[in-house]
Structures are given as structure tokens and as C-alpha cells.
Image 1 (cartoon, one colour):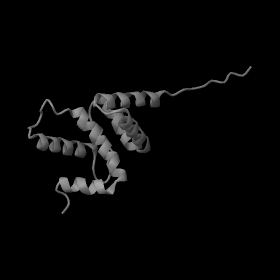
Image 2: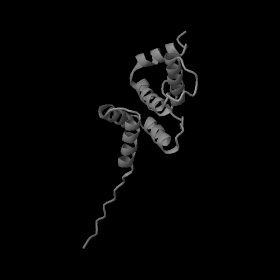
Image 3: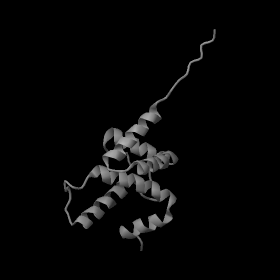
Image 4: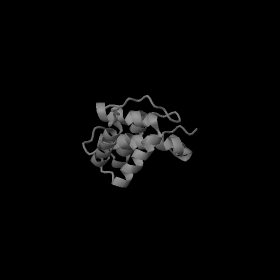
Length: 128
């Protein structure tokens, strides 16, 4: 009798649950979360960044797309929030988890949307 073992790697399922919980925590709906997950699967370098962030609560910051890293975009979102809300740094209403997920999403958007890069560069004063 032959023994055929089946090996199951649950790391992708575990990653999916972590990402879905991250999306729920940051008030994203299920459709948004599914789209975020799909884009992560198409962008392995961002996938690695997100999982590192969820595990360590800090940015790995090894992935660069179109000259930008997740920290560049995170800072852009923080500045944009502070300008819109007319608030200083460290405001308790400014949820850094929300800013982080938006930064990851924007990093993936940079890969597929050249117009977003122009918008980002213009707002950062790099469009000269």
C-alpha cells in the first residue's frame, strides 16, 4: 500500500485573513478589500511590504515603484490630511493605519496608472 501525503501551505490563507482584518479595521468595505487583495497578488513586491507591515507594524520600505516608496506616499497622505484638516502633527483623529493602507493602495496604483504619478508629482512640487 502506497502512502501519498498531501502537504498544505496555509500561509496564503493566513495572509488573506490578516489583510481582510486590516481592511476592516481601516473601515474599508468588502469590495474594496477584495480589490486590494487582488492587486496585492498582482504586485508581489507590495504584497511582501504589506505582510511585513502587518507583522511588525513598521514599513519594510524596500519596494520602489516609479521612484516612490510606501513611506514617500505615507508622508504625502499625512501632509495632505494635515492640510485638509488644518491640524498639526500627531492629531489623535489622524489614524496612521488608514494612512498606511491608502499608501499601499496608492503604491499599487502607481504601477498601473501613469496619470496618478503625474498627480502625485504635482502635489509634491516635483512637476517642474
